[in-house]
Length: 450
Image (cartoon, rainbow, N blue to C red):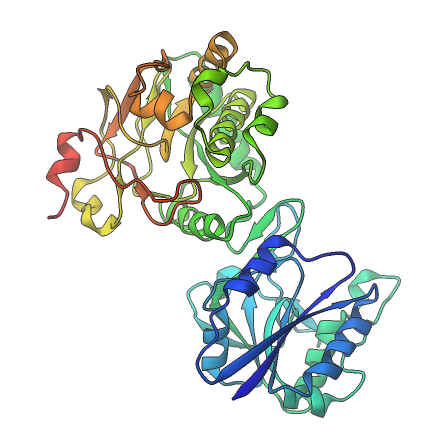
Protein backbone atom coordinates (compact mmCIF):
# COMPACT_ATOMS: atom_id res chain seq x y z
CA UNK A 1 0.00 0.00 0.00
CA UNK A 2 1.60 3.26 -1.17
CA UNK A 3 1.01 6.40 0.89
CA UNK A 4 0.26 9.96 -0.22
CA UNK A 5 0.40 13.07 1.96
CA UNK A 6 -2.15 15.67 0.81
CA UNK A 7 -0.71 18.89 2.22
CA UNK A 8 -2.20 22.39 2.21
CA UNK A 9 -0.21 25.43 3.41
CA UNK A 10 -2.30 28.25 4.90
CA UNK A 11 -1.90 31.44 6.91
CA UNK A 12 -5.62 31.94 7.41
CA UNK A 13 -8.06 29.32 6.12
CA UNK A 14 -8.86 26.88 3.34
CA UNK A 15 -11.41 27.76 0.66
CA UNK A 16 -14.56 25.60 0.85
CA UNK A 17 -14.12 24.60 -2.80
CA UNK A 18 -10.59 23.37 -2.04
CA UNK A 19 -11.74 21.33 0.92
CA UNK A 20 -14.60 19.83 -1.09
CA UNK A 21 -12.23 18.95 -3.95
CA UNK A 22 -10.02 17.07 -1.48
CA UNK A 23 -13.06 15.43 0.14
CA UNK A 24 -14.37 14.26 -3.26
CA UNK A 25 -10.97 13.10 -4.50
CA UNK A 26 -10.97 9.60 -5.98
CA UNK A 27 -8.11 7.46 -4.62
CA UNK A 28 -7.11 4.47 -6.76
CA UNK A 29 -6.79 0.98 -5.31
CA UNK A 30 -3.41 0.33 -3.72
CA UNK A 31 -2.98 3.88 -2.40
CA UNK A 32 -3.76 5.48 0.93
CA UNK A 33 -4.04 9.25 1.52
CA UNK A 34 -3.60 11.41 4.61
CA UNK A 35 -4.72 15.04 4.65
CA UNK A 36 -2.92 17.68 6.72
CA UNK A 37 -2.82 21.47 6.67
CA UNK A 38 0.28 23.43 7.68
CA UNK A 39 -0.07 26.87 9.23
CA UNK A 40 2.31 29.81 8.99
CA UNK A 41 3.04 33.17 7.38
CA UNK A 42 6.33 32.51 5.54
CA UNK A 43 5.58 30.36 2.51
CA UNK A 44 9.01 28.78 2.00
CA UNK A 45 9.15 27.87 5.70
CA UNK A 46 5.76 26.13 5.46
CA UNK A 47 6.73 24.26 2.29
CA UNK A 48 9.93 23.03 3.95
CA UNK A 49 7.87 21.80 6.90
CA UNK A 50 5.62 19.96 4.47
CA UNK A 51 8.69 18.44 2.80
CA UNK A 52 9.96 17.24 6.19
CA UNK A 53 6.66 15.38 6.67
CA UNK A 54 6.38 14.17 3.08
CA UNK A 55 9.68 12.26 2.96
CA UNK A 56 8.01 9.67 5.20
CA UNK A 57 5.38 8.99 2.50
CA UNK A 58 5.69 7.69 -1.05
CA UNK A 59 4.19 10.85 -2.58
CA UNK A 60 3.39 14.45 -1.73
CA UNK A 61 0.23 15.86 -3.30
CA UNK A 62 0.76 19.59 -2.78
CA UNK A 63 -2.45 21.66 -2.88
CA UNK A 64 -2.76 25.40 -2.32
CA UNK A 65 -5.57 26.60 -0.04
CA UNK A 66 -7.43 28.34 -2.89
CA UNK A 67 -7.19 25.68 -5.63
CA UNK A 68 -9.99 23.26 -6.55
CA UNK A 69 -9.63 20.41 -9.02
CA UNK A 70 -11.64 17.57 -10.66
CA UNK A 71 -12.25 14.44 -8.59
CA UNK A 72 -10.16 12.21 -10.92
CA UNK A 73 -7.06 14.44 -10.56
CA UNK A 74 -5.08 12.08 -8.33
CA UNK A 75 -5.84 9.10 -10.58
CA UNK A 76 -4.52 10.99 -13.61
CA UNK A 77 -1.41 12.26 -11.82
CA UNK A 78 -0.46 8.82 -10.49
CA UNK A 79 -1.02 7.16 -13.85
CA UNK A 80 1.83 9.16 -15.40
CA UNK A 81 4.33 7.64 -12.92
CA UNK A 82 6.83 10.51 -13.25
CA UNK A 83 8.99 12.37 -10.74
CA UNK A 84 6.73 15.40 -10.60
CA UNK A 85 3.55 16.37 -12.45
CA UNK A 86 1.27 19.40 -12.14
CA UNK A 87 -2.27 20.23 -13.09
CA UNK A 88 -3.14 23.59 -14.70
CA UNK A 89 -4.38 26.74 -13.00
CA UNK A 90 -4.01 30.45 -13.68
CA UNK A 91 -2.85 33.29 -11.48
CA UNK A 92 -5.48 35.42 -9.73
CA UNK A 93 -5.11 38.43 -11.98
CA UNK A 94 -7.93 40.34 -13.63
CA UNK A 95 -7.77 40.53 -17.44
CA UNK A 96 -4.81 38.16 -17.67
CA UNK A 97 -4.52 34.44 -18.30
CA UNK A 98 -1.19 33.46 -16.78
CA UNK A 99 -0.59 29.75 -16.25
CA UNK A 100 1.49 28.60 -13.28
CA UNK A 101 3.71 26.40 -15.44
CA UNK A 102 7.00 27.54 -16.92
CA UNK A 103 9.43 26.96 -19.80
CA UNK A 104 13.04 28.00 -20.26
CA UNK A 105 13.45 31.39 -21.92
CA UNK A 106 16.25 32.83 -24.06
CA UNK A 107 17.77 34.63 -21.06
CA UNK A 108 18.39 31.48 -19.04
CA UNK A 109 15.40 32.03 -16.78
CA UNK A 110 11.82 30.79 -16.78
CA UNK A 111 8.73 32.24 -18.42
CA UNK A 112 5.05 31.34 -18.07
CA UNK A 113 3.90 29.06 -20.88
CA UNK A 114 1.10 30.64 -22.97
CA UNK A 115 -2.08 28.57 -22.94
CA UNK A 116 -2.42 28.94 -26.72
CA UNK A 117 0.83 27.02 -27.07
CA UNK A 118 -0.36 23.92 -25.21
CA UNK A 119 -4.17 23.91 -25.33
CA UNK A 120 -4.25 21.14 -27.93
CA UNK A 121 -1.81 18.95 -25.94
CA UNK A 122 -2.61 16.60 -23.09
CA UNK A 123 0.82 16.14 -21.46
CA UNK A 124 4.17 17.91 -21.74
CA UNK A 125 7.52 18.35 -20.03
CA UNK A 126 8.04 21.75 -18.39
CA UNK A 127 10.84 23.65 -16.65
CA UNK A 128 8.93 24.53 -13.46
CA UNK A 129 5.49 24.86 -11.92
CA UNK A 130 3.64 26.28 -8.95
CA UNK A 131 2.83 24.06 -5.99
CA UNK A 132 -0.95 24.57 -6.19
CA UNK A 133 -1.79 21.15 -7.64
CA UNK A 134 1.26 18.95 -8.06
CA UNK A 135 2.19 15.34 -7.27
CA UNK A 136 5.82 14.80 -6.24
CA UNK A 137 7.59 11.51 -5.50
CA UNK A 138 9.20 11.69 -2.08
CA UNK A 139 12.54 10.68 -3.60
CA UNK A 140 12.68 14.12 -5.26
CA UNK A 141 12.25 15.87 -1.89
CA UNK A 142 14.87 13.63 -0.24
CA UNK A 143 17.47 14.09 -2.99
CA UNK A 144 17.03 17.87 -3.20
CA UNK A 145 17.48 18.03 0.57
CA UNK A 146 16.78 20.75 3.11
CA UNK A 147 15.97 23.51 2.46
CA UNK A 148 13.95 22.31 -0.48
CA UNK A 149 12.20 25.68 -0.85
CA UNK A 150 13.80 29.13 -0.64
CA UNK A 151 12.10 32.39 -1.65
CA UNK A 152 14.67 34.75 -3.24
CA UNK A 153 13.38 38.33 -2.96
CA UNK A 154 14.71 41.31 -4.92
CA UNK A 155 13.97 45.03 -5.11
CA UNK A 156 13.04 44.55 -8.76
CA UNK A 157 10.28 41.94 -8.83
CA UNK A 158 11.44 40.58 -12.17
CA UNK A 159 14.58 39.33 -10.39
CA UNK A 160 12.59 37.61 -7.64
CA UNK A 161 12.62 33.81 -7.68
CA UNK A 162 9.64 32.21 -5.98
CA UNK A 163 10.11 29.26 -3.65
CA UNK A 164 8.35 26.86 -6.05
CA UNK A 165 10.56 27.80 -9.03
CA UNK A 166 13.60 27.55 -6.73
CA UNK A 167 12.62 23.99 -5.82
CA UNK A 168 12.01 23.05 -9.46
CA UNK A 169 15.44 24.35 -10.47
CA UNK A 170 17.08 22.24 -7.77
CA UNK A 171 15.07 19.17 -8.80
CA UNK A 172 16.03 19.63 -12.47
CA UNK A 173 19.69 20.02 -11.46
CA UNK A 174 19.43 16.62 -9.73
CA UNK A 175 18.20 15.06 -12.98
CA UNK A 176 14.49 14.89 -12.17
CA UNK A 177 11.90 15.73 -14.81
CA UNK A 178 8.77 17.84 -14.36
CA UNK A 179 5.57 17.55 -16.39
CA UNK A 180 2.12 19.08 -16.72
CA UNK A 181 -1.18 17.32 -17.44
CA UNK A 182 -3.18 19.77 -19.57
CA UNK A 183 -6.41 17.81 -19.02
CA UNK A 184 -6.39 18.66 -15.28
CA UNK A 185 -7.81 22.18 -15.22
CA UNK A 186 -8.28 23.72 -11.79
CA UNK A 187 -10.09 26.76 -10.44
CA UNK A 188 -8.30 29.44 -8.44
CA UNK A 189 -10.39 31.37 -5.92
CA UNK A 190 -9.76 35.01 -5.08
CA UNK A 191 -12.00 38.05 -5.41
CA UNK A 192 -13.64 35.86 -8.07
CA UNK A 193 -13.05 32.37 -9.40
CA UNK A 194 -10.36 32.20 -12.07
CA UNK A 195 -10.66 29.30 -14.51
CA UNK A 196 -8.21 28.04 -17.12
CA UNK A 197 -9.04 29.39 -20.60
CA UNK A 198 -12.07 31.29 -19.34
CA UNK A 199 -10.71 34.39 -17.63
CA UNK A 200 -11.72 37.37 -19.81
CA UNK A 201 -8.83 38.66 -21.87
CA UNK A 202 -8.15 42.37 -22.41
CA UNK A 203 -10.36 43.47 -25.32
CA UNK A 204 -8.35 45.08 -28.09
CA UNK A 205 -9.11 48.70 -28.70
CA UNK A 206 -10.16 48.07 -32.28
CA UNK A 207 -12.76 45.52 -31.12
CA UNK A 208 -14.05 48.01 -28.55
CA UNK A 209 -14.36 50.63 -31.26
CA UNK A 210 -16.17 48.28 -33.64
CA UNK A 211 -18.57 47.18 -30.92
CA UNK A 212 -19.24 50.81 -29.98
CA UNK A 213 -20.00 51.62 -33.64
CA UNK A 214 -22.32 48.62 -34.03
CA UNK A 215 -24.18 49.44 -30.80
CA UNK A 216 -24.50 53.11 -31.72
CA UNK A 217 -25.80 52.14 -35.15
CA UNK A 218 -28.30 49.66 -33.76
CA UNK A 219 -29.45 51.56 -30.67
CA UNK A 220 -32.09 53.53 -32.55
CA UNK A 221 -33.35 50.60 -34.63
CA UNK A 222 -35.92 47.96 -33.74
CA UNK A 223 -33.33 45.21 -33.24
CA UNK A 224 -29.68 44.46 -32.50
CA UNK A 225 -27.17 41.67 -33.15
CA UNK A 226 -25.66 40.13 -29.97
CA UNK A 227 -22.05 41.15 -29.44
CA UNK A 228 -21.15 39.01 -26.42
CA UNK A 229 -22.34 36.42 -23.91
CA UNK A 230 -22.47 36.44 -20.11
CA UNK A 231 -21.84 33.03 -18.52
CA UNK A 232 -23.54 32.77 -15.14
CA UNK A 233 -21.51 30.67 -12.74
CA UNK A 234 -20.73 30.25 -9.03
CA UNK A 235 -17.84 28.89 -6.97
CA UNK A 236 -19.52 25.48 -6.82
CA UNK A 237 -17.07 22.97 -8.42
CA UNK A 238 -19.88 21.54 -10.57
CA UNK A 239 -20.75 25.03 -11.80
CA UNK A 240 -17.09 25.77 -12.52
CA UNK A 241 -16.75 22.55 -14.51
CA UNK A 242 -19.91 23.24 -16.53
CA UNK A 243 -18.94 26.88 -17.14
CA UNK A 244 -15.60 25.77 -18.54
CA UNK A 245 -17.42 23.75 -21.20
CA UNK A 246 -19.81 26.62 -21.86
CA UNK A 247 -16.89 29.02 -22.38
CA UNK A 248 -15.18 26.64 -24.77
CA UNK A 249 -18.37 26.36 -26.84
CA UNK A 250 -18.36 30.17 -27.15
CA UNK A 251 -14.70 30.15 -28.17
CA UNK A 252 -15.42 27.51 -30.79
CA UNK A 253 -17.85 29.82 -32.62
CA UNK A 254 -15.87 33.02 -32.06
CA UNK A 255 -18.29 34.54 -29.56
CA UNK A 256 -16.92 37.04 -27.04
CA UNK A 257 -17.92 36.09 -23.50
CA UNK A 258 -17.57 37.21 -19.91
CA UNK A 259 -17.87 35.18 -16.73
CA UNK A 260 -20.49 36.55 -14.33
CA UNK A 261 -20.35 35.28 -10.74
CA UNK A 262 -23.82 34.81 -9.30
CA UNK A 263 -25.18 34.59 -5.77
CA UNK A 264 -24.53 31.38 -3.87
CA UNK A 265 -24.95 29.92 -0.38
CA UNK A 266 -27.13 32.70 1.02
CA UNK A 267 -30.80 32.62 2.01
CA UNK A 268 -33.56 34.02 -0.19
CA UNK A 269 -34.21 36.66 2.47
CA UNK A 270 -30.59 37.81 2.20
CA UNK A 271 -30.75 37.75 -1.60
CA UNK A 272 -33.57 40.27 -1.80
CA UNK A 273 -32.78 42.60 1.08
CA UNK A 274 -30.41 44.73 -1.02
CA UNK A 275 -32.64 44.79 -4.12
CA UNK A 276 -34.82 47.70 -5.17
CA UNK A 277 -37.75 45.42 -5.94
CA UNK A 278 -40.49 44.38 -3.56
CA UNK A 279 -41.02 40.64 -3.19
CA UNK A 280 -44.39 38.90 -3.34
CA UNK A 281 -43.91 36.70 -0.27
CA UNK A 282 -47.07 34.66 -0.78
CA UNK A 283 -45.75 33.27 -4.07
CA UNK A 284 -42.14 32.48 -3.29
CA UNK A 285 -42.34 30.69 0.03
CA UNK A 286 -41.74 27.42 -1.83
CA UNK A 287 -38.57 28.64 -3.52
CA UNK A 288 -35.27 27.11 -2.58
CA UNK A 289 -32.51 29.51 -1.58
CA UNK A 290 -30.49 28.37 -4.61
CA UNK A 291 -33.40 29.18 -6.93
CA UNK A 292 -33.66 32.69 -5.49
CA UNK A 293 -29.88 33.12 -5.93
CA UNK A 294 -30.13 32.08 -9.57
CA UNK A 295 -33.08 34.36 -10.33
CA UNK A 296 -31.49 37.41 -8.69
CA UNK A 297 -28.24 36.74 -10.57
CA UNK A 298 -30.10 37.01 -13.88
CA UNK A 299 -31.56 40.34 -12.74
CA UNK A 300 -28.04 41.64 -12.11
CA UNK A 301 -26.96 40.65 -15.61
CA UNK A 302 -29.94 42.59 -16.99
CA UNK A 303 -28.68 45.65 -15.12
CA UNK A 304 -25.26 45.25 -16.71
CA UNK A 305 -26.77 44.95 -20.20
CA UNK A 306 -28.70 48.18 -19.64
CA UNK A 307 -25.60 49.94 -18.33
CA UNK A 308 -23.55 48.87 -21.37
CA UNK A 309 -26.38 49.58 -23.84
CA UNK A 310 -25.73 46.26 -25.56
CA UNK A 311 -27.47 43.23 -26.98
CA UNK A 312 -26.17 40.21 -25.13
CA UNK A 313 -26.63 36.49 -24.67
CA UNK A 314 -27.18 35.13 -21.17
CA UNK A 315 -25.95 31.58 -20.61
CA UNK A 316 -26.32 29.55 -17.45
CA UNK A 317 -23.25 27.44 -16.71
CA UNK A 318 -24.75 24.26 -18.22
CA UNK A 319 -25.55 25.81 -21.60
CA UNK A 320 -23.52 25.23 -24.75
CA UNK A 321 -23.49 27.45 -27.81
CA UNK A 322 -23.93 25.74 -31.18
CA UNK A 323 -23.89 28.67 -33.61
CA UNK A 324 -23.06 32.36 -33.58
CA UNK A 325 -26.14 34.56 -33.93
CA UNK A 326 -25.89 36.75 -37.01
CA UNK A 327 -29.55 37.74 -37.13
CA UNK A 328 -30.98 40.67 -35.20
CA UNK A 329 -32.66 40.26 -31.82
CA UNK A 330 -35.80 42.45 -31.63
CA UNK A 331 -36.41 44.90 -28.80
CA UNK A 332 -39.22 44.01 -26.40
CA UNK A 333 -38.77 40.23 -26.71
CA UNK A 334 -36.99 37.60 -24.66
CA UNK A 335 -35.42 35.38 -27.33
CA UNK A 336 -34.61 31.88 -26.17
CA UNK A 337 -31.75 30.18 -27.99
CA UNK A 338 -32.77 26.54 -27.59
CA UNK A 339 -34.09 23.59 -25.65
CA UNK A 340 -32.65 21.09 -23.13
CA UNK A 341 -31.13 17.66 -23.79
CA UNK A 342 -29.35 15.13 -21.60
CA UNK A 343 -27.25 14.21 -24.65
CA UNK A 344 -26.38 17.17 -26.93
CA UNK A 345 -25.21 14.79 -29.68
CA UNK A 346 -28.88 13.86 -30.21
CA UNK A 347 -29.35 17.20 -32.00
CA UNK A 348 -27.70 17.49 -35.44
CA UNK A 349 -26.67 21.14 -35.23
CA UNK A 350 -24.37 20.90 -38.24
CA UNK A 351 -27.17 19.84 -40.57
CA UNK A 352 -29.62 22.29 -38.99
CA UNK A 353 -27.29 25.25 -39.37
CA UNK A 354 -27.41 28.54 -37.51
CA UNK A 355 -30.42 30.76 -36.74
CA UNK A 356 -32.26 32.20 -39.74
CA UNK A 357 -35.34 33.66 -38.08
CA UNK A 358 -37.06 34.52 -34.79
CA UNK A 359 -40.29 32.62 -34.01
CA UNK A 360 -42.82 33.74 -31.41
CA UNK A 361 -43.64 31.05 -28.82
CA UNK A 362 -45.87 30.86 -25.74
CA UNK A 363 -43.45 29.12 -23.40
CA UNK A 364 -40.56 26.71 -22.90
CA UNK A 365 -38.77 25.15 -19.94
CA UNK A 366 -35.68 26.94 -18.73
CA UNK A 367 -33.76 30.20 -18.93
CA UNK A 368 -30.53 28.38 -19.71
CA UNK A 369 -29.78 30.38 -22.89
CA UNK A 370 -31.45 33.54 -24.17
CA UNK A 371 -30.69 36.89 -25.78
CA UNK A 372 -32.06 40.33 -24.99
CA UNK A 373 -31.30 43.89 -26.05
CA UNK A 374 -30.66 46.62 -23.50
CA UNK A 375 -34.10 48.07 -24.26
CA UNK A 376 -35.70 44.73 -23.40
CA UNK A 377 -33.58 44.48 -20.25
CA UNK A 378 -34.72 47.95 -19.23
CA UNK A 379 -38.38 46.95 -19.72
CA UNK A 380 -37.83 43.82 -17.66
CA UNK A 381 -36.31 45.86 -14.83
CA UNK A 382 -39.14 48.39 -15.01
CA UNK A 383 -41.61 45.51 -14.80
CA UNK A 384 -39.83 44.33 -11.67
CA UNK A 385 -40.15 47.77 -10.10
CA UNK A 386 -43.86 47.85 -10.87
CA UNK A 387 -44.84 44.27 -10.03
CA UNK A 388 -42.01 43.15 -7.78
CA UNK A 389 -40.36 39.74 -7.74
CA UNK A 390 -43.38 37.56 -8.35
CA UNK A 391 -41.85 34.16 -9.05
CA UNK A 392 -38.64 32.42 -10.07
CA UNK A 393 -37.03 33.12 -13.45
CA UNK A 394 -37.91 29.83 -15.16
CA UNK A 395 -41.60 29.97 -14.21
CA UNK A 396 -42.31 33.67 -14.60
CA UNK A 397 -40.35 34.45 -17.76
CA UNK A 398 -40.09 31.12 -19.62
CA UNK A 399 -42.46 28.23 -18.76
CA UNK A 400 -45.19 30.75 -17.74
CA UNK A 401 -47.24 27.93 -16.22
CA UNK A 402 -47.99 29.35 -12.77
CA UNK A 403 -51.57 30.62 -12.99
CA UNK A 404 -51.51 32.16 -9.51
CA UNK A 405 -48.53 34.44 -10.15
CA UNK A 406 -49.11 34.99 -13.86
CA UNK A 407 -46.13 35.74 -16.10
CA UNK A 408 -44.05 38.54 -17.56
CA UNK A 409 -45.63 40.96 -20.01
CA UNK A 410 -42.57 40.77 -22.25
CA UNK A 411 -43.27 38.36 -25.19
CA UNK A 412 -41.22 35.20 -25.64
CA UNK A 413 -39.57 33.96 -28.86
CA UNK A 414 -36.92 31.50 -30.03
CA UNK A 415 -34.29 31.38 -32.75
CA UNK A 416 -34.88 28.92 -35.58
CA UNK A 417 -32.85 26.84 -35.98
CA UNK A 418 -31.72 26.93 -32.37
CA UNK A 419 -28.37 28.50 -31.44
CA UNK A 420 -27.76 26.78 -28.08
CA UNK A 421 -28.69 23.86 -25.86
CA UNK A 422 -29.09 23.35 -22.14
CA UNK A 423 -26.99 20.26 -21.38
CA UNK A 424 -28.93 18.57 -18.56
CA UNK A 425 -26.71 16.90 -15.98
CA UNK A 426 -26.48 17.05 -12.21
CA UNK A 427 -28.20 20.22 -10.99
CA UNK A 428 -26.70 22.74 -8.56
CA UNK A 429 -30.20 24.02 -7.67
CA UNK A 430 -32.66 21.12 -7.68
CA UNK A 431 -32.42 17.64 -6.25
CA UNK A 432 -32.89 16.24 -9.73
CA UNK A 433 -32.24 17.93 -13.05
CA UNK A 434 -35.28 18.67 -15.22
CA UNK A 435 -34.69 17.23 -18.74
CA UNK A 436 -38.11 17.91 -20.30
CA UNK A 437 -39.20 20.35 -22.99
CA UNK A 438 -42.57 21.86 -23.83
CA UNK A 439 -43.75 22.11 -27.44
CA UNK A 440 -40.70 22.36 -29.73
CA UNK A 441 -40.36 24.08 -33.10
CA UNK A 442 -40.25 22.19 -36.41
CA UNK A 443 -36.57 22.87 -37.20
CA UNK A 444 -35.58 21.33 -33.86
CA UNK A 445 -37.78 18.26 -34.30
CA UNK A 446 -36.51 17.74 -37.84
CA UNK A 447 -32.86 17.60 -36.71
CA UNK A 448 -33.38 15.60 -33.51
CA UNK A 449 -31.91 12.11 -33.78
CA UNK A 450 -33.98 9.21 -32.50
